Image 1 (cartoon, one colour):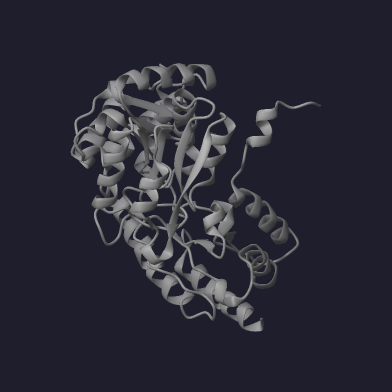
Image 2 (cartoon, one colour):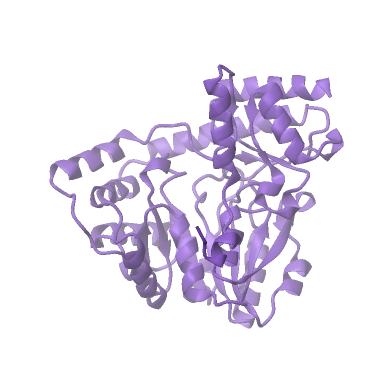
Length: 387
């Protein structure tokens, strides 16, 4: 079979590949602690599930507008307006099956072949994959541990030029847990306005912050008109399998994204849209309970990793990932991640799965119980000391 050339430019998510390998070892009787996948280990809050069930019982099983039913778009607009202290309406909202389509559709709608897109590196691998897929030029913006994985301002200034079509930012960030400060966002805003760039602001972990408040670039004057907010329900409400995400953007772009949605998936499952409304408007107690538990796990895993020979880990400010530097072990991160899986029974990801600037690091997801995290730390420590 002969494939289109563009398929050679399409990347993947290593987390799912490692999950398959880990499951295969479990099938052989091995005990594996899963710290590779970025998925909350909590159940979806029951009020959300019940809202979906009730919608099914009422017959909400038919097509809806591609952008989402008016009620869910209104609920999202109100949530974004209140949480970011900005003013948006349902006309600015697109509901999608997961948040990834917002990345894909935004890049499809805005980036022509040869256009440059700046993206964080290490960063979520689908950014680079989608830029390459559409024929854009992916320009990595290094995130460095010595800056707690915030970018260097001079490096960003040197990268932005008149060919830059889009700047992608992610805060809190995957895989590092780093958080951008207000001064970082102000610089992105200054450069975006100077060079007429669009900003894709991935804020999927906005509710999972621990030490500092979340800031959205849309609050900076002039940026609401040139920013796409990417958000969703997977991380905040433990709804990964529901596949519910959304984007908030200027109305003229939302209209074009709705056309892409029509061509791609028609619409999000109708009964799930009522669950989304309940998630945003119903009780938020369980969201805060999960956030507090993730914070306790963060403290545990970072303290434990820093006691392991050759590991150096800064404290992540958000999300649920620890990203220790492992260069002092003398081993490459790809080799060490494989060694930990087979020798220690701990599934994790090599840093370069998130880009070249992740080399020398390993990502651990602490979206697992404290008991399992403690078990993993003990296994890792034993395995490293064998080296």
